[in-house]
Image (cartoon, rainbow, N blue to C red):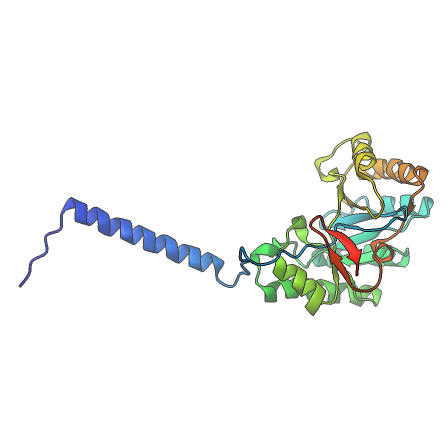
Length: 255
């Protein structure tokens, strides 16, 4: 019979192999069911802005949590005769159905911002689809119409999400090319300066219904945009009909 003697070196090697095996199992478990984009796969880009020579742009608001400023924002938009786009999370929709109806009845776009505001990149394609469809269903129960616009929480996306949105759900996946950064509570003038530096034909501006300085900044932003000869329209009116592609910057270009 052959006797195997375990030395410190042998024990160290066995322990290292054990650790490597455990680490590999953890990685495989954490990625199970998730969509992984390979290096050779062509990256699919959502719509960040629109390729147009017309002086037109859109203002959009993401609504995921608070609701204390929504009525004020709607009053401001109505005062300036501006229609905007509101991307709503299903949990917000369920909590504030009257506000959802008021947004819709005021003539603004009601877009989809997911069901639970997750990191969509961490979900499987089936889970991504469920996040989108659940929100669509909740909005439709209140407005009678299914959203056609989707914006991913945190602006995070991958090929699977874009494909799911454009294909299975027949929606536009929309981002933005101007971030007001209102969630960081900048001053109204600081927000206005960001718009002044970045506004161009086909721009999509990102704001939030729950940011405390947004109600004070919104009139300044609208007045500046209009003074530059731009028309402000909801995103549904900004996007041209027909087939399109997006370039490496996310500019929507008609075929």
